[in-house]
Amino acid sequence: IPTQELLKKLWVCANDFPVNVSEIEKANLTEEKSTKVKSPKIKECFAHFECKLWAKHNAGDHLLIIGHLLYAEVRDDCFCKGKYAVTQAHPLMHIGGNEFSSVGRILRVKEE
Image (cartoon, rainbow, N blue to C red):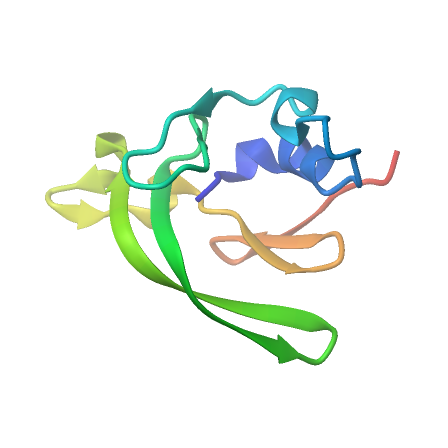
C-alpha cells in the first residue's frame, strides 16, 4: 500500500512500457524480494500484501481480481498504541482515471 507521497512515482508506473522495461526502475522506486511470492514488493510502500490468485471476473471495463492472502506486513511507524494510525500512514487509494484519495482528500495527478 503506497503513501500519498508516492503518487507521482506511481503514476509513472501507469505508462505502457515495453515488456523488457521495468516501470519500477522508470519510477525510481526500489524493488525488494517478497517473502511468499515471486513478484517483488516496493520498498517505499508502508504495507505489503502477498497473494495467490484465487479468481478473476470481468466487471464492465475492468477485471476484478481476488487473491488468497499469503503474507502481510505493515511498517511499525504506522501504529500508535497498538492501533493502525491511518493519519500517519496516509494510504493512497485510486478512485479512477487520474484521481486518488488519501484520508478524505482527493488528489489529482497533473498530466505532463
